[in-house]
Each structure stands twice: as C-alpha cells, then as structure tokens.
Image (cartoon, rainbow, N blue to C red; front, side):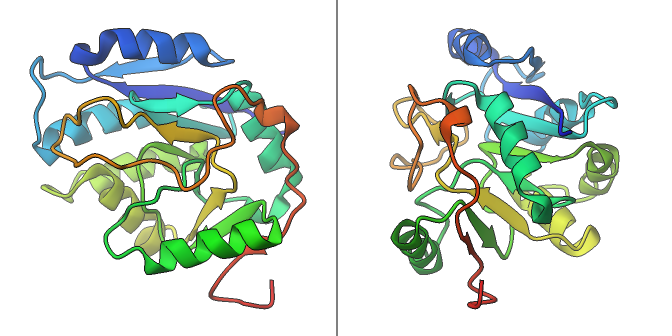
Length: 227
C-alpha cells in the first residue's frame, strides 16, 4: 500500500498562504521555510528550500510529495494520490507531477497532450520529462540521492534540476495525473519573476475530492501511440 509524506516549500512573506495550505491538507506536512527573509530570484536560494523539503521525506513512507506554497489543492489530496498510485502499477518507480500546467516554453506538445487526454477521458499523461515544480511526488528512495546529485547543478532552477536527475540519473519519465490534483494560485505575485497566466490546463477543482476520481482511464504516451 502506498503511503505519502508531505513537505511544503515556503517563504515567510507568504506565511498566511502557507498556513491556509497546510490546514487544507489531509495529512500533516513539514514546512521547509526559505532561509532568506526577503524574496530572492537566485536559483540557489530556491534550491536550498527545495533540498530541505525533499530531505524531510519520511523514511517510513513509500513516496514523498513536495508542494510549493502557492499550490491550490483539492480535498482529500493525499488520500486520493495514494489511491491513484495504488490503482496504477505501471507508475511504480516514476516521479509524478499532480500539476499539468498550460505553460512551459513552446507549448504545442503540451497542448496536444492535453487535447488528446481530454478527448479520450485519460487518467494519466506520460511526459518526456518533468516540466513543473508546483507539486511533485516521487518514491522516497529517490529523496536523498536526488538532493545529493542536484547540489552540483548550481545556477539551475529547481524543477530543471529534478528533471535532469530523473531523466539522466534515474532513467525515469514523468507521469502526470489527469486531471491535475493541484492548481497554481495565479493571483499571488511570483517571488522569482514569473509572468502571470501560470495555471493548470485542467484542475479537478478546489472543492472536489481526489477520492472521487477514476484512475482506470487511458494513459496518454505520445512516444507510444498504441497506448
């Protein structure tokens, strides 16, 4: 049975947002506070917070979920995520993003995946790589080696470091839940200089329960069109 521990990457300037996010979660969450008191756009400052969040993985859990403090979550998030992982044996060992965004550089591939997922009523999309850092879950066994290996990628954004680790070191592609269990709060000013409009392609809904979702639908893998 899958069990998921949770950590939140947080900054003090967003303390009320963090408090509300933690209160919404259906499991206790470790809050990894940024060491810098003022917002910083430096990738290393963000990585320090991410490293602390991943290092907080419970060794007794099978998976660890790291949320950013501007994540918008549905009800029963962790229980629903555990049910999704239990229902989909093929995802074992892979990182999972429970946020599928509408933004990541050139978006034609992302848009095509989203259109196909909506058309066939998919439950999962398998991407070539990890694209977003809003809400990532991975097997707990990856937490320590991930942090150690990503330390060397100085100057690289948090999500890009993880993408490189899972692709080049672990040899794993990223699975995305469809719909996403998390959205991005676009009303909150970015702490790292991102522009507005960074939201989910499809979010199950803040008032929806992740336990109500069916994970037996098709898996979209554009590398293997037979699936």
